[in-house]
Image 1: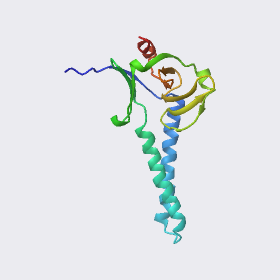
Image 2: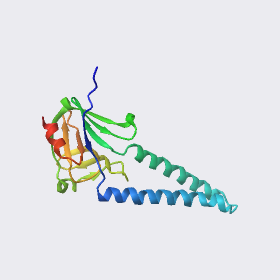
Image 3: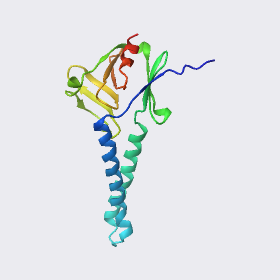
Image 4: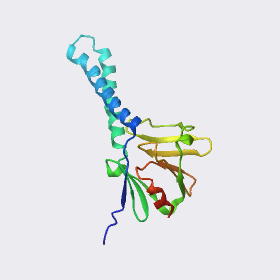
Length: 172
C-alpha cells in the first residue's frame, strides 16, 4: 500500500507574528526570572513567593500551549487538507469532500473581525467573529494570503499559506 505524500504549502510568520514571537519569548523569560528571583534572595516573607510561583508555572503552561499549537504548514492530500503542528496529535484535518467553497479573505474584510478566544504569540489562531461571515476558526501565520474555507456544515475555517495556489487546488 503506497502512502500519499501530499503537497506541502509553507506557513511562515508575518512581521507582526514574528514580533509577537520575539517579544512574547522575551516577556516569558522575564516572567520566569522575575518570579524565581525571590526564592534566591530569601527575604523571609514567602507568602508572596507563592503568587510568583503560580505566575511562573502558569507562564510555562501558556508558552508550551502556544508552542504546541503553532502552525507549521498546510499539506494537501488527495482527500484532505491537514494543518500541521509540531505534535502530530494536534494536527487539524479537513476532509475535501466537506468543503462547500474556498475563496480569498481580504485583509480589509478581516479587520472587521473580532477575536473570541486564543491569543497567540505564534501566529493567528483561535475563534473569530465577523458580522457578514459569522464565527470562524483561524489557523493562520500571516495576514497576506488569507483563504476562507466554508464547510458543508456551515462552519468556516481560515488558513494563510505562503503560496496562494492552495486556493486553486481547493477549488478543484
